[in-house]
Length: 213
Image (cartoon, rainbow, N blue to C red; front, side, top):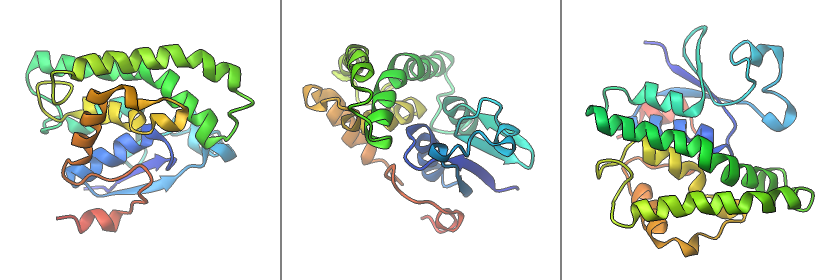
């Protein structure tokens, strides 16, 4: 079996989703750092893997690539405990994956990118302020949902939690105050307590995963 190869940018929450799932599944993979700040995702070589010029990209086998973080999560979690078999529960997982990319990531992750990764809070001040209302709206939806639930779908840890955790747990780096959201804070701790949890800044290697457990 070919070793999976993940083209990734370490600070990226979208890349972190894949690293976290692969680690928790105990699947070996090779991580290839693509520094998006240096234009490495815009080279002809990388664009041949993903014409959209974005990370993460998963190389499943030589020359076979899959992009879009949540699509990769679904691919990897098929027939595992991380994706329910029940048709309705699966659809609910997909519902939260779509929510994350449309209503959550554009506001919380983008603010974090400008402030924490680029270090240009002042330059992007107006745009960041424009993201605030929608970002807090997304967090409020999550808070209300989690007020009487342990996890997002079916009272079990799934890729819906992984997708939403990635940028929520570092939302403060984008200027969002999570102290207003006690249910989210409790859920973040539950995710961190899951087996084989790794932090977003954890450098990974194939050998590390072969030695798990």
